[in-house]
Length: 546
Image (cartoon, rainbow, N blue to C red; front, side):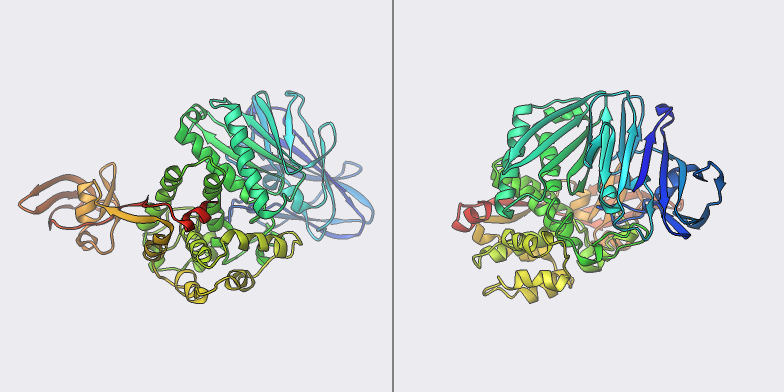
């Protein structure tokens, strides 16, 4: 067993002191790989940049040579049946749902950030010991050995685990279908315990009823409620970490709804992603990019289902749900990346720029665009007497529960077998492998469900007339079909605007130092405000929200 020891002699320095005990049975080169990314975010994090003062010694305390193999891989030469000790410092100074933080109030570790994997020892167990006696309460998603000691059967399990101890750790719990669910809150609580527990139990009950079972006996919701603005969630098999701030804003029903949304989203991941996973991500290889075209399944379906289950379980009424759907539709309607890159390639290219704005209209967003793809599939299947919920239930039984993974073609066959009179292959060709507008399809699809997509003029005059979106007086986005597209630039500052005699005149200051006066004719209707409205209650609507 490989053994990790964690401590921090000076928490205000934000450095963890870590020792890894390595019993080696065979002679030869031993490679130690620090993850370069983590599950749930398909982008390099390069955790090795947080390491300093790394050294290796043998069991007699003699210093050993460490060789650098790559930016995050080290190696040494081992002898038969010898034990070695790796010591290093890790900077735990980033607060989000997937990182590490230590200070005078808490010790918070996502082990994937700071634990080395011993290469070619895939199923070798790891133990963790945390030496921090400052606080009495703690949570760890690993099984507990004793005191502050925990066990992982493999590095994959270790990398999927979290530890938190703090001076303000609140613990609540509830039960559903013979599984125990824990809620751990670090920070100020500005909402009703009763309301939160009831809402969590309701969506948990509904999710388990539809999937048939929960994959674990215990599950942990770990909340970091912060005094500053923050919003993030990361999925794990045995729990989730969610950061939210400012914590006081959770007294506001809308902000509380956001917390519920991310919580249900992350819990859906306990099935989809944590277990229902494409073959290319099973298991994860944290040393390099793990490419997949399945982003619309991993995050698009989860984004759709996360909010839908708040409707199904009664937390959202229909109007509240549609407000959340409106946000996603507006995000998609203001971006034209679907014209230039399909959602399969957009998923593959998460490793390039998937978590940043990127250049204008280059790609699709696997969360937002993927959500609308999932919505469309669900509506199509419901009209054929099935549903996306049924598809995901079978995906759990076929791929997730036996832990075998899927390929895209095999997953699509679960949909295709339920297509009835719907031509699912044409849908796939146009909206998943192709570059057609999913919103135009949804305008027709939702009508039998008693809903309608409406478009109203944008209240911002320059946005409506010229197709430019401004932030603090500077152009952030230009509609590719507007007259402004050939006359203005992203980054231009609108110094002054005048509307007279059906003409819009702009005084523009350009980044290159140029000053321009430009005139445009009125009459545009760009970036309309898109909304979904309920028209009437239909049988299909009742079936969809059941």
